[in-house]
Length: 77
Image (cartoon, rainbow, N blue to C red; front, side):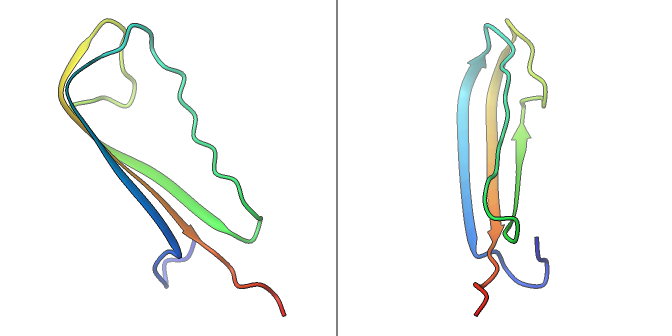
């Protein structure tokens, strides 16, 4: 990751729901793959939804913003 320049690739998404209920607690995993020289970071911000949800609980007025940022190294000559 490089903080001295903006990312070369940036993907952002937003999900909203009036009501959301989980019958089972999901097993969530994010994998970022690429060359060792490339750097990526991922993160999300949640509104009205905890990091660890509970089964059989109804969450209301939720919003999840997610971002994936990547910095690419130029090819060697």
